[in-house]
Image (cartoon, rainbow, N blue to C red; front, top):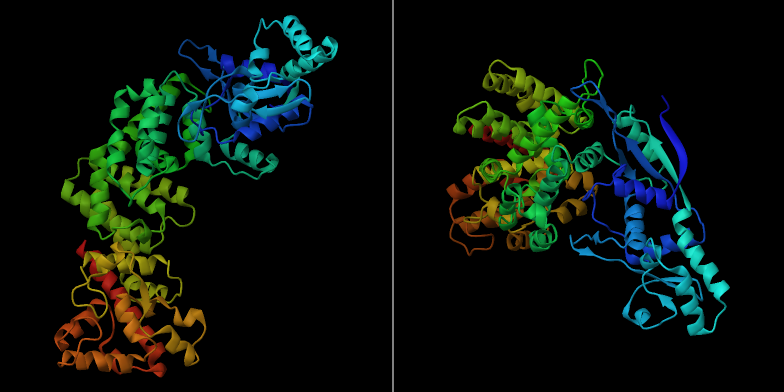
Length: 597
């Protein structure tokens, strides 16, 4: 069987395929994002018979029905949605859904005398030489003879000339557009590669994009409702002001029960976990199907039996039902809020503290799985907190995350005792060698966005540590206020003393959360000099560095910030030793924090 077929199809035939459902355009695969000038230019190119690029469709495999007959799969539009939507808007007069989820008409005007296209506007409406909306002349039954006669008489023009131009305009429907039909037996990875190679813009479609397209066009098993649930939930979370637009412009869906179950998110102002459609799809699929590779979802939604390699209708039905249930569990207010609460209870109070969205996603998967297996709520909280932190500091989902998702969900699901399995996995990953050697070495980096520095801050938040040299201001308070990270050995001091390489002075073991006013007072002094003044402050001198006023409190504050006690006597020659000592202390804090979860 051929991998693909290249052919030409007329605009009229193409739009006919869209109208009768032969080619399925996902309703909200993506709102129409072209501006009206691009629609105008597309129509102008067709009028002049210029090439407008290929569209790409992918045929869903035929599936076996219960009676043994085959149901022919639809053609899913993989590339060309914006062009086809533009054609349906301009030539058929259909409304489009813009990026604000509002329905609107795009009218393209044509000047029969100059053969010029423009987007319709009030000025053009007043100029009778323009056809204000070309979709009118494209309608079946349009009286071309009478129109040409009236137009020619009005402007004193030759009817033949006007008739020729009108016919050319109407003949846009006969212009041929290239179509690449990808075979039904191609797997999703091959389809992705083909798309990337032939698309001139180099747009990369993810497996999630294919899955969402597949879901959107299924009417029999509520596929489009699944797609809207995912899309609107994510949209409300990020842009709650669009709620009224969506509600008023998608009346049918807004009256469904599932719509009412996602609208709560618009009032939450949640910033810690802001999922996009890929996140929702990944969590729902991995949780319900016990698989981690999204390419499998496309196959299952197509009805594939992985053992016989047949495509069966009962698998299609089961897959859509399972996916919808997974999505419902994701968007459940109870589940979502409890999971976010668990993250915050671990010290993860801001999205900037976790670089890997996959860590957050799998944490939610684990939460849903443990609830399904009736694990006690307090134990779920502990297990999920630890798994998330373990995943961050071991970078569990950094490389080949789908493969790791797949491995983890299968092993978790198949474990005779899931609680014991999680404990065993923790002991395997976080052994004494990790805490005492590996983690200490990983603190030897100048990358401020590293997961080790971020997790160190998470630990400080959870342990309610105060900022360095602060009596009352906590690390949590500074992070919530978007406070700054500062150098313990001042950067200017290091640079002036020969340590001017940023990989040296920007070591994360030289970082601490510090009030800006305290950092200003430190300026470019050596630790010996400014800590001498801090000690004097603790012995009754005027407050210069925060409000700490006792040596015992100073000692405790240094412990909170993993700063060795001999730091008070350090100068430039002690910098490397300081870094070594502090890395050990920071790793020890993470260990203490982890086992407190």
